[in-house]
Length: 169
Ligand code: SF4
Image (cartoon, protein in one colour):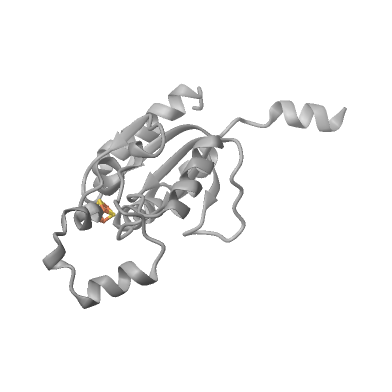
C-alpha cells in the first residue's frame, strides 16, 4: 500500500539518452557545458538514463527521447543505432554529422588518387563501411538539431518540445 501510494506521487520525468557516433563530440561538450547552468533544474524534469560521457551505469531501455550525435560509419554502429531506435519513442539527430553526414562523411568523396598509404591503413584496420551515412539513412529520425556544433537554442527548443509532448512541467 505504501509502495503504491509512493509510486503514485512520483513525478514523471523525461527519460533521455545521449549517444555519440562518428564525430568530434563537440555537441556533447556543448551539452555538458549547458549542465553548468541547467543541471539543478533539469534533474527535476529529466532522467539521464543513458549518457556514457557522464556515468558508467547506463540503461538502454524505454527512453522517451534519444539524442544522437555523429554519422554512422560502420555496420557495428548501424546495429547500435538500430538498437537505440528500438528503445526510444523519439530520436533527435544532433549536429551536422548526424543530420547531413558532413563533415564526417567527407571520405565518401575521396577519389582513388587521394587515398594514400596512411588513409588506406585506417580503412584496412578499422571496421568501416563503404560509405559514411547520415542518421536518417539508417533509422527513422523524428527531429533534427543542425549546426556544427549543434545550435544551442535549437537544442533547448527541442528539449522543451519533448518536455511538453510528455506533459512534464
Ligand atoms: S557536426 Fe561538427 S561539431 Fe558536430 S560532431 Fe560533426 S564535426 Fe563535430
